Amino acid sequence: MRIKMWGVRGSIPTPGPDTVEFGGNTSCYEVRCGDALVILDGGTGLRLLGQDLLKEMPIEAWMFFSHVHWDHIQGFPFFTPAFVRGNTFHLRGGVNVSRTLEETLAGQMDYPSFPVHLSEMGATMTFRDLYEGESVMVGPKNDVKVTTARGNHPNGVYAYRVEYQGKVVVYITDSEHYAIVDPKLKKLAMNADVLIFDAMYTPEEYEGQIGGPKTGWGHATFVAGCELAKAANVKRLVLHHHDPGQNDAMVREKERRAQALFPNTMAAREGFVIEL
Ligand SMILES: [Zn+2]
Ligand SMILES: [Zn+2]
Image (cartoon, rainbow, N blue to C red):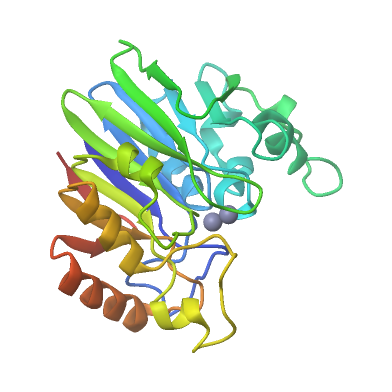
């Protein structure tokens, strides 16, 4: 299994000199499981992944969307392989995360917001919304297992566990922590090799010592990520969905503080690859 980080920022892209180290593109991860290509979320990082995929067309990929807030779908209209006939994309989202995934992806490309409609994109697309707790087998050999769980986020969110030949990556984005470790997410993340977790805030930011309180906004702290990683016996924690207000120095500091709680932690950074 090979995981590549294409977009690690939360809420809105943040290009500029203060974010070059960790990157400014929003959520997108490429997960290779043997021949199978799994894509987690379609934030602006998806555009760059699309450019990279041009050299291996025709392609077939399974795309899992956590939810349909802008920062998780906005790269899709700029995902060049989706315009090319002969490519196939299986698009999966969670049931009851606002409208269906197909309606929402089409909606962001409706006149007058975008010049080309989803139905005019050339690739073959299949859509299906998944139920909470559902597991599906994907890939050309049907040997990659993807399991869902619901997180805690306004309008809903789904987290995903991807398993292939005994290796496991779990992707939990946009999910606010509770006073205790969420038993559902603990179960989803159990014994994962890599846990990618929404660690948008420091505790000070979350509690409102910096800016207003962020309670109910649907995002977690790095402390919550470390607690989940410990409770679920995770091998490696990846802090994801950096707040757009955090520059490189702030993300580095968040990473350092998290490593004091859970040593095998890194802050997600664009372009970084994890091989399992
Ligand atoms: Zn988000
Ligand atoms: Zn969101």
